Length: 274
Image 1 (tube, helix red, strand yellow):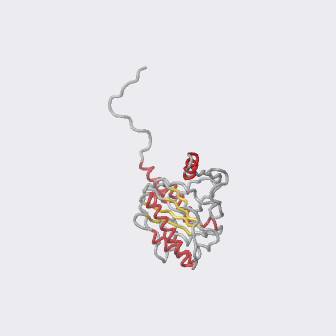
Image 2: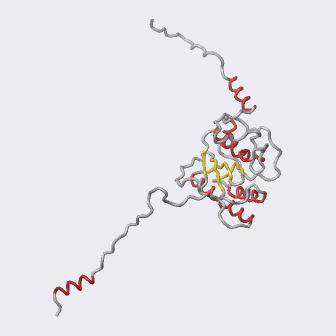
Image 3: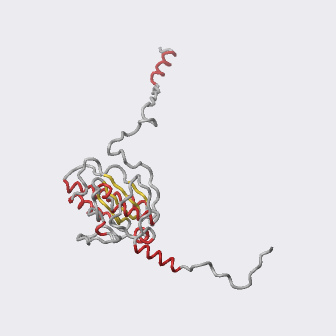
């Protein structure tokens, strides 16, 4: 016959035991935590939510390639980039100006909203990477990190971005002069001295925003000179030299305004108290 003590012991043996939860001591917010930084991610854009996009404002987009890739300015590689530019542009997203450098691409784009901008840039990245790998018969990623975007709010900012994008090769090639053949410069219609017309078809689309089409020209400082250079990181901000057409337009507007003090009002005037 079992005793009461034996029944209690057997009952306790059948009960499930509470497992102790071990809290890990690694990870968390501390210095040096997180994914290690590599050479390709040293200058990448931070992973932060992008702001809402206004369709009236063009955007200056910069995409950087991974280290160790062949030059984007090689003839075959440049042809792959222009093919991606043509196929990436559409009704909701369009590339209006661009320049291809050795390891990065600059573009001025227009988009209907934030989603169209994100999908449009992603579509160009995918098309350009696939065309680049297919042309060079390679496998692997092409772009490094997220793309950098700067919204252009004023005509002056839009014109400065035009100079920076179309004449960006002068930052990397000191002896460069004229118009960059690896950009949309040969098709650009805003030069003060137009270069010879390009033989190939224009890979960009016509700008639809006021800033991208006429604002930078009418209010930003006039047409671009072929000898203009983009501003360096340590150079002060300088006002662009206005073109002859812009100066003539400003003078005509000043001449149309009445000169001298305004005419006195007609009728009986009220005397001020002494």
